[in-house]
Length: 252
View: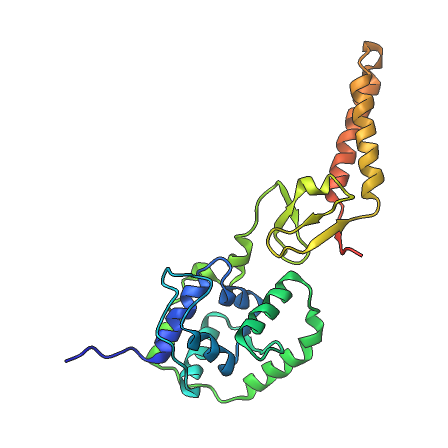
């Protein structure tokens, strides 16, 4: 007896799980943003037969599409692990446009308030809809995502690069190189969303004062100037700390 092919909803759930596990997978980012594609856009992704985020390593499958019932099962399982998610096309008509809109939201180039009303309306519609029956496939999907994945924010926070980077206002992760901040004229670019930032207008005079304090500290080497050196050392540390604490701002 030939083996029975798994339901399409189960296959789709496995594909989505594989994408979520990727660091920059579209569905991992979508989970963090609380968004899920509608049936037409999801079918475009599944009909492509390839996950561009995974390349040739398990990122290909036989193209297929979901029926409305299959989509309902997949969505039910997704909502079980991401309860704050709403179905939102993000104003896109194609799958690449939906992914691009998703990245624009993460990068902060799109105003979240523009779609707030639509999101609320979608949430109200979803809450008014009848509850979908829980099936074996839905329960399997609900248990298929490890707890470590959370709501997708772990995939975004994994981009945090540590103390040598400052926080990007869009990504909310430390992904702007700190040494770029020491050159206020140049500004810095986030290595995650690639958005360029400038620093506060007081950064340049503050940096100049820091350099001046350091130069005077190095020159004032006479023993009788020990107190001056101490004051200059404290001033240098304070100015340097203030420079690093300056907020980022949008470029002109």
